[in-house]
Length: 321
Image 1 (cartoon, one colour):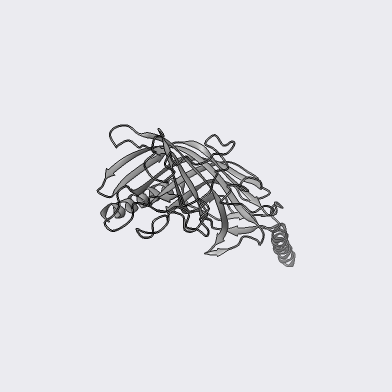
Image 2 (cartoon, rainbow, N blue to C red; image 1 turned 120 degrees about the horizontal axis):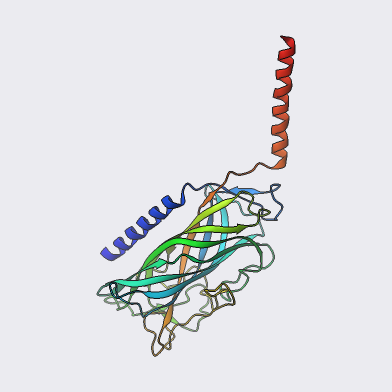
């Protein structure tokens, strides 16, 4: 329990430091139909739904002080534009994303039952957000995340994360649990170790389509919380289907599957394979450092009429004098 508290504290400290470096977060103005000002809606965050995250080539991970293990972090998912806790995404639309970033990982602690892993993101990588109202994304198949309109792209500036993974059975508990606990088991009984963790990132926006994102955004954050472990017997994936394929690899091209090692279990043992991955679900949200929102043309016209009326009133007062 001490390690879990320390892990949550360290992640919170990282998130706080990165939020400060990114500056004040503001409102984001989005037109889901791509029509610019008219018909746009305003939100304060994007709430990313529980999504698939892949720690690629994480095993075996070296101990702190003995170097670091180079890994890749891949993710894809869907999201909703929120304002004061309410979903303002128009019916029929979805926001999707794909991301990839390289990182360095180390094992900080080797406990009796769990290992504590820390990782630091390297600058670069990619993040792409899309808006789509045609083809719903399919988490299980890993499709439909990149076929909408690309609304903004970004690269990673800073980021870090931590997680605990159970490596030895707790007394009275099984060594592994069922991997796919969301609806039918689509993974043929695959087993997984359990884990808990979180991460935070700050990204620099490289480009945006002003027909969709009306006001200028410069940076945004991603604050994620791994929900894989609610209790020591929960499944790894209980809120979303574990994907068979990630829509992008680390070079932002093609797609990639998941390497569970030769024994097929989602754990820290690769079997006879030299390296393998760890696959988790995580919940996340993003806030934006953006320019001021822009009134719709009708509002600007009303403002112009009001200012014009003030001007006429001023002229009449001068003439009366």
